[in-house]
Length: 172
Image (tube, rainbow, N blue to C red):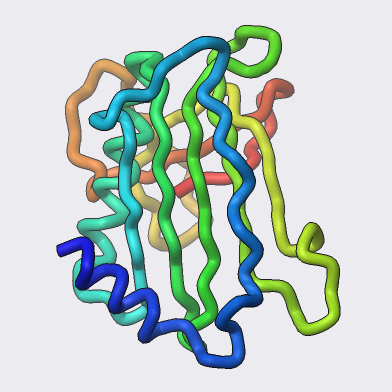
């Protein structure tokens, strides 16, 4: 199955972009924390018209929520492709920050435009709180938070990420 995923990845990248994606930065494993093979999620490859998209995104949410809630170190990488076939890679690393506070580092990277600095095509932030909410399809109704102890599948909720200052920083 991994060879199929690699083939999809290679086929989906336009020839003009080959060699333009800088290598990912080395992963931090936290402060002396060992990440076991079972704590590695992915790699996930999700294309715009992927019929398994909702299932894959649910698996990603389950991985993040389980590791977050159990305060278990872990790392997951997902690559989303736009309609045009442009990849955007997001890495989620659950670990203690440099001060020993439980958090998650989210790193997003996409191919640089011709002649631009590759660092302008990378974004990174830290998450200090993760909440599950019921999906809102109208975009306006108030968020309904799911209790931390309620068991539910990743396809049935969304994740919201918050900064140390309790400001919404992202989600999935």
